[in-house]
Image: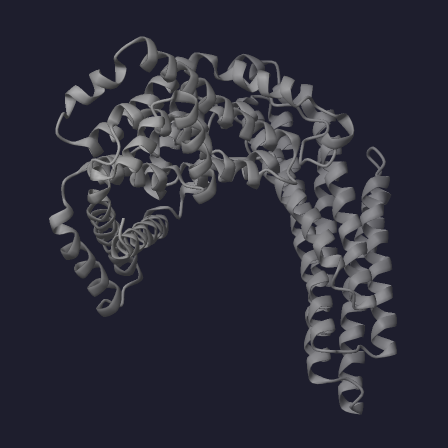
Length: 547
């Protein structure tokens, strides 16, 4: 290959990869804003899971991106390993859409696509038009790059050395290894399949040799998910193992079929004059057939992943989870017996655990402000994420119970628990607000006066006293609710007093403007914590009345 041919090849490759990145980003921005929400709300239905995985991957043009999202959801506890299996299977099908797009003979229209897309980005002000323009420009640039690569590789057909090299890839193991390695390097099966299609279109490689490279590319695409799983929970790592097993099983199966049977010739016969379409069709066939074969065995794949990477109890504690509640399948039959009565004890324990976390975060947040140590913000944010997770899971649990609860007393109790979990979550939000002030204090070199710091210490102590009082409730004890109400009133009174003291400091010039603003916001959070504590206490008393 001449120097100009090599430069043309590199330029075409650059345009191809950049066009794919543009198209993927545009698609995700235009239509992918809800994809995480869709994945998060996914049910355990295997067919729905496969369809959602395929659909989202087709939208964002990346099975790696979908799998990385799945790893994240499994790591946070928002998705079970069994749910992840179906998404991963669907993602492998959805990623084949890129090859099919490339196989379409629209190269002559590529400059038009690029022009229209760039015009929309440059001249149209609407954000959605920008996204659509980015998609069209990316598609056009992708095809221009594809055409450049194919043209630059045409002379290689007459190079005996290159032909001999390509012939070696007819060795299945070598072809698979090359495909896996190359895809692992560029971390995109869609891009590596596109480059293989360009080679085939130029006549530089035969379809019979390219199939083994194609199979290896399916294995190589797993590297992105493997990298994403580093530092995650064991469940998240198992999701990557499932992704890897799926593609290894498919590769072994199709390699055997291609060796023992003329599978490559059969696929090629559908589009004899279109090498790019042949590769796209084999890629689609590979993933659809493998999914259909493994679909009944999805739960077994999840179990095998657990056996490969067994649970270690000490590690499981770091993963977000429900400690006392277990996934409940509520039915109308359960409801007739008063389903909530069976689970009330577990629900109370889970809420007590959640309340302990909120209390710890309040203490951490006040300490961060007093010490002006923003490093504690990471700890507080991690705990807040856990509180959000618990609020969501407990709320879902309660909503299932209350749907079938026919007993009026039971229904009232469950409703009170629903209100309690929301109030605990809000306490966590105010803790994060308070902790966030430490970052501003540190970055802007703001210093509270000695009197303000003393008042903040008092705020911390009474907040912890009020939260601790919630754990000391007595059955039917009206004095307990009176005590909590008195604590909430003290918080209100202290807020009023401290605001007056702040005004005096402002008049005396001992308080900077920025410090005054932060202190005022901190007082608001302090007062709201007291309100939520009283709300929780009132609901707890209501539960006692209905018990």
